[in-house]
Image (cartoon, rainbow, N blue to C red; front, side, top):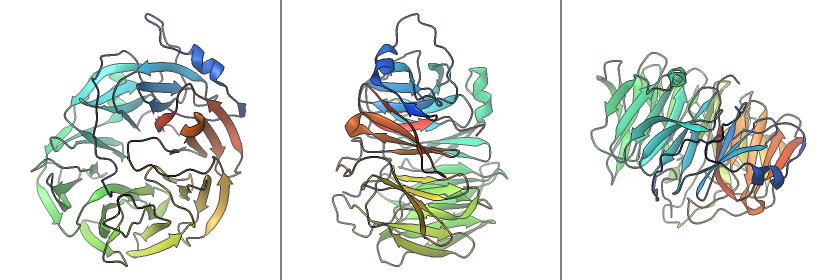
Amino acid sequence: MNKPIRTRALTGTALTLAVSVVLTACGGGDGSSGDAEAAKESPGAKAVAVKDPLVATFDGGLYVLDGESLKLARTIELPGFNRVNPAGDEDHVVVSTDAGFRVLNAAEQAFTGIEYEGAKPGHVVRHAGRTVLFTDGTGEVNVFDPADLASGRKPEGRTYASAEAHHGVAIELSNGELLSTLGTEEKRTGALVLDKDNKEIERNENCPGVHGEAAAKGEAVAVGCEDGVLIYKDGEFTKVDAPDDYGRIGNQAGSDASPVLLGDYKTDPDAELERPTRISLIDTRTGKLRLVDLGTSYSFRSLGRGPHGEALVLGTNGTLHVIDPETGKTEKKIPVVGEWQEPLDWQQPRPTLFVRDHTAYVSEPGKRALHAVDIESGEKLRSVTLPKSTNELSGVTAGH
């Protein structure tokens, strides 16, 4: 079924654990599960700080790994379906639990005590030095400077309450404008823009099923629709129509190095799960949309951007496709994992792509593996085997 892929259907009980999770990988050679088994959390054990940490989720907890060696630094027990995103600085990640957003100091492998409580914590967006949290169950938006997390106290930030709770997303621009989606639990229609004082200045409701966001070079921001994308740039909304009556672009990836956005592309509104083979490339300068057939399907956790704006897609053929966003040409195909198929349940594990600098980190749940790949050379830098299969993968991003 074509469910919004980031809807939180979280289960389990949130624990007050003094530990946290972040994922990142690099280096050369192979890791093993020996180090992983030895990195269990023990009461009273003081964590050794991890540089450029990576965090991966598994059924029942989090793994925190060293970003250079991929060595497992700590295992944190945390029941339920949890999700992870970069917080926007060098040390922290945001963990979505059944009770809300929790901030994890991944470098020190400990939860900070900073929480944003609320049902169904949703999208975490980083842009222009601000991090924005959208809580689906309440419609509340929280904006903060990730640098303020270093104090260990909850940052003083901006808040906004949506007219109605819905599965949404928000992003703050460099001029202080806040773009946030419009909708209800039953129907999502578009987006509005608020000034610094939360006064509405723009609105567009020509975006059925609005989902996901991405920012391109020149601070053009797009949200996905069931019939294309809606772009906000220079104070105005522009609709880019899909070539099909139903052409859903629900997941996007942007880059400050490219004016072209990468999106998925689905055309069957009645499919239990559509496994598309085409991606969309949206030029925010011209409003043109290009479809590219990769010859392989992919999932919502397959999209990323390289250090120079390259469009990256992890295919179910096990290959990382490196695409020129200007031409749509596949410049490189890097074999990374074995062939796989996207599961029907969006919460179930599948190979996941996380990109940082020149390195692509790819999980392989079927083999309990995590790989680090150099995007430019195509070399597999390091692999590690973990005690359990992982689901989501993320890490710290600032300073890179």
